[in-house]
Amino acid sequence: MIANRNKLGPRDINSSRAAAMEARRRMENTGTRPIRSATQNNYQNSKIHFNDRLAALIDRLYHDQHNQLPDEEFRRRTILTLRELARDVYIQMKNDGVITKTTWKDIDDDVKTYYSMILEQKAKECGWNIYRCVKQWAARGLLSDRCRGKKRSTKNDPKINTQLGDDFDIGDLDD
Image (cartoon, rainbow, N blue to C red; front, side, top):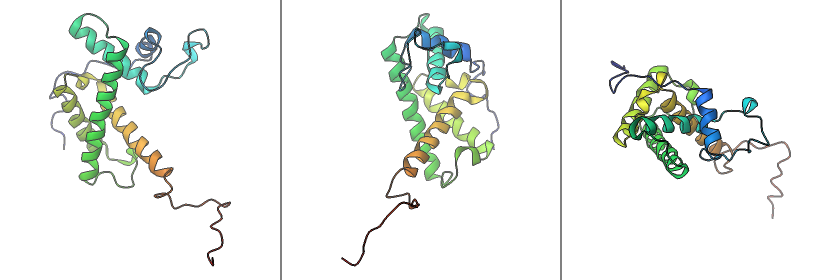
């Protein structure tokens, strides 16, 4: 299905915990999740969120191009842009019939690669070379998050979720 996974260029950026921690230290807010300050939290034991990894990637790509690090607002806007592109690819996946009731982990690896490459191409067109990520970690993470977010929202939507708990009382229907 996929002839050349490296058609956009070489993949030379690994997902690094150390780089994500440094990106978090540099700015307290790496996107959607505020974090505790250094005095409240030992960063070594802190969980690395995907937004921290995206922030480190943005820092690296921006630094490679401009020889300086981006400011917090630029980083936040870029993360939102990448998530919007992932939403567009997710919609394409739905329209193509890939997303039905399956979760991201149930999708065939070649299909994940195909749609990850589409996302990488869209990001490249916007000036972001996320195709440089080894094993497509950024594109796959963005799509995985998007699929997970949709699953959560439908699970909690009373119009969609028809599973009723034991304590659910429908009331008297004879009125």
